[in-house]
Image (cartoon, rainbow, N blue to C red; front, side, top):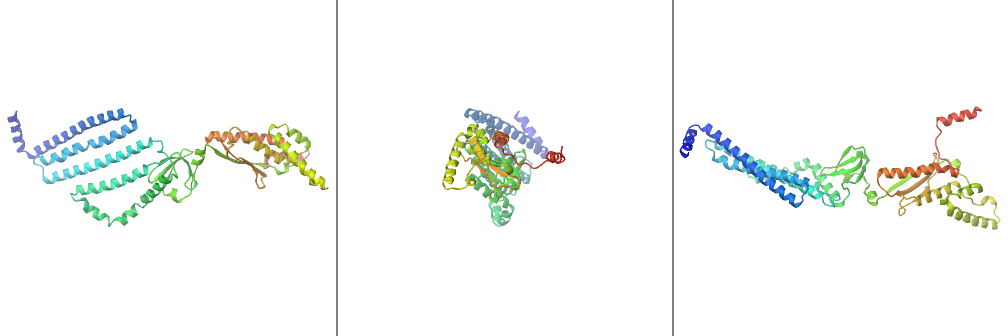
Length: 415
C-alpha cells in the first residue's frame, strides 16, 4: 500500500495542475466534514445544556444561530492552514485564499457577536422591568460600533495591511462621517434620553397628531419608535422627533386605571324655569333628590323669611330652578354609579351659554381604561340623562330638521 501511494504521488507530480485540483478538492472536503462535525457536537451539546438550564425556545434558537456561525470558523482555519501546504499552487493564490479566510473569520466572529447581542435583548425582554427600560437602542449602537471595527479589519486583512494605517485616516474623515451619520447620532442621543427618563415605554398609548400616530408603542429602536395605530396601521416615528416635538402619552391614565369622561348636554335655554309646587311634589319621588330638595327648601325659606322681615317685595324671593335640580340629580346619580371613580374629580357644571344651548358638562372618571367598557359606561350615563331630562321639563337643544319645518308649515296652514 505505501508503495502504491508513492507511485500515485510521483504520477501526480508530473501533472501539477491535476495535483493542485485534487488537493484543493480534498481540502474543501475536509473543511466541510469538520464544519459538519463541529456543528453537530457543539449545537446538540449546548442545546441539551440550555434545555437543562430551563432556557426558553426563543433563547435556544438564537443561541443555535450563534453557535452555527462560530462553527464556520473551523473550516476557515483548516483552509487557512492547509492552503499553504498545497503543492503546485502559486504563492499569490495562496496569499489571496489565506487573506480571504482571515476576512471570513473576522466577519463570522462579528456576526456571532451580533447574534449574541440579539440573544441578550431576547433574554432581557423576559425580565419584569424590560418594558419600562428597553435596551434595544443601546444594543443597536453596539452593533454599529462592531460593524465599523469589522469593516476596518476586513479591509486591512484583504489588502494585507495593518489596521492602524486605516485608522489613521479616520481622523481626517471625522467631519464627513459626522455628516453621514448625523441622523444616527441624533437618534442615539434621543434614544438615551428616552430610555433614561422613561418618557416612552413599549405598550404606552402615544398620540402624535402631526405624524398621524395614535396607538400603542410596539417597538423602540435606535432610529425609530413604531406605533401601531388603532386602525391597525403602523407609524414609524423618528426617535429624534420625540425629543423635539410635542406628543401625548396616556400612560398615566393606564397606571391609574381610570379614564376621564368629559362631555356636555346642550339644554334648550327656553325650557329653563322655576319649579312650582306641583313639579316639586313630583320630583320628590326621585330618591336621589330627597335630601337635596329638603335642604334647598330650608335654604330658600330662610332667605325669603329674611326678605319678608325687611319688607321686601315678593318679587325678590328666591326659587329653585329645574336646571339646578337637574344638575343636582346628575351629580347624585354619578355619586351612586358603580362604574364611576368616587376618589377622583367629579363635577357637574354649567359652561357659558352658546347659540347651541346651555352646556351642562359632566366631568368624572370611569373605573376602567378598556376602550369598549369605557364607551359603554359613558353611553349608558348619557342614555339615562337624555331619557330622564324631560321629567324636569327641560329639552335638549337640537337644530330644526326637515320634519320640524314640515310640521311648522302644516301648523301655520291650519291643518
